[in-house]
Image (cartoon, rainbow, N blue to C red; front, side, top):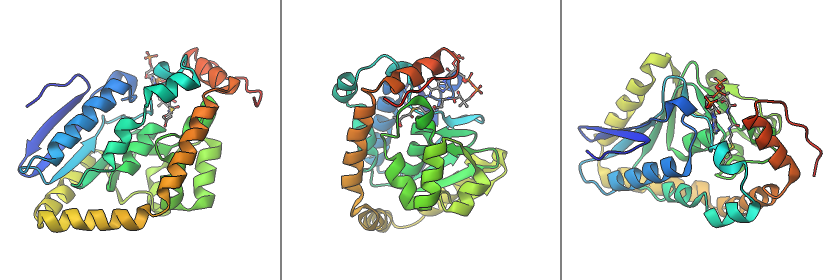
Length: 258
Ligand code: CAA
């Protein structure tokens, strides 16, 4: 197999298991990790020997979001030029099913990454949330758009505006995820579903995924673009600077609404 800095890949039968391995930072999604991840997902997508992929993190964190240390000092223009979400867009074009096996934190970009997958299996200890508002920003990788479609407006707004995470059980009730299992069985259960899917006709599987995507996608595009521009605009705000600095300095932020 290939060697990566931030991920590991294991193929068994038709099923690939991709693991995020930046455990000391709760799998914070820095640019290099995202590049590695998406490059590998694209490679698996054109590998005829792979029919379904499971994506997982550690027992404590699926992913704690975009890497705040990469954004804390970046200006709005730098963020725009960096094109941070370019690799995220490529996940949407993957043809084969992607299953998230989530233990621990799936926050911010981590929650968005799980939602970019087709099926989500969670361990009992999983926590899903969009805490961007605590940093003076907002989601930029689909958080406002996919969450509304998954759980409805009222629940999405509560999650997005309070920044408070929800439990795996709540996420199940809300329809955000597919099932909750004991944490130690989470990856195993995701692999089981992947094995079932990979036993089906690959072209049928691909076209089912494509068709569901069309239904789901019809008005998503405009929302994503609008969200993104708002995200970049907020990167020009003082509260973003304050929120991210406060996080880095491990203190409470002082927001002034500008
Ligand atoms: N970015 C950068 N570093 C992060 C990180 C992140 N998103 N999340 C955690 N880390 C780092 C911490 O800074 C810490 O590093 P050091 O050991 O060097 O101090 C290490 O990971 C362990 O984290 P904690 O000490 O904070 O661990 P904890 O168990 O006390 O708390 C946590 C865990 C609740 C997940 C907490 O780390 C946290 O709140 N993380 C930030 C979550 C967040 O705000 N995510 C949204 C990011 S913005 C985003 O994602 C926008 C977008 O869509 C583009």
